Image (cartoon, helix red, strand yellow):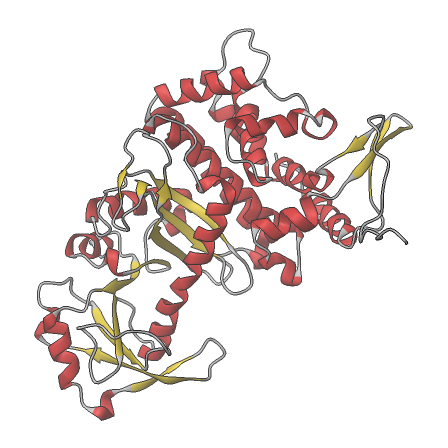
Length: 458
């Protein structure tokens, strides 16, 4: 009787591999750091926290943590996978050194956070210049999406509290620059909040918006060319008034709660006033119409605000709410953009759903869990997560083309970063040879060539 044959080949495993590099594809992130000058900017910003005769530069330690998170790590100890490859990542600090630095930065309060944020803003402006027509401001406008994220805590961490979804943890408020349909997005704000923080707290939205604007080039920190989008959590009088304040003049598109007054106005809208909604490709959206509400429903809101409502046949299985009417699902948003058809404005607001993709990417990049106990430490962790997400957005924007620019972190790791290689020293040069049979090796080498063509910082 023949023995069953396994579906997988048998291999003999030995521990004598020489000059083999795991995670060799991560040289894409290392080269991105070097070309955009992020290592120099972070090191200069954190120079005041470097102790005399210290071996490891605080900026390098923070960047190593960000690289570990970008490669899939979710705690400080995951910097160990970089430490195992000194030929690619250089000398990496030990776990105790990393922990001490995080504690030191946390103890300095907002001072260290502001230093890191200033360095990120400086580098972001350079990256957008290098990206040219691929930059998120290529059309002269910038869109920032604000949205809350629930982060579950499995232990009693500082500021962890019951959430509105009956879970336990934190409720950070995040901000992302939308790269449009041809790209992904990059983080520009992360405000750590307790789990029981309100979804529609105007003060938190204002703080998050300030953090986001500070990350943009100066010409986008005020003026109509910058659009702030939120869901209905941002539809408060105080936040909308802050956005429209004289001298700030930001554009906004914020969701609104269907109140009884809005509901009554919708019922009075004549059939002829409803305009078919549109799809991103310009086609008509089946079963959806939009209309603009006017009159006393705008009383008490900033001058120039427009209120646009959409009615749509609910999807199969969806339940109607008390605020819906005539079997139609109602949604509403406010904007101060003029001279554009309301169907285009509604489509622009609907595309805010891309922020959910950014949140999914953030959860897969260090935001699934806040690994530290104290809130000050986790605020430092949030900055590290943002640096990791910056790199995962900047590298595709500068080096990848086609559909690869849309790859989310998990796919980038599986296809590019995990590629194995062999380090060869010849003629006083070190050469990293990637596996020829790996299907995406050509993408890695082509991306490295594009990065090599960029000018060096300074």
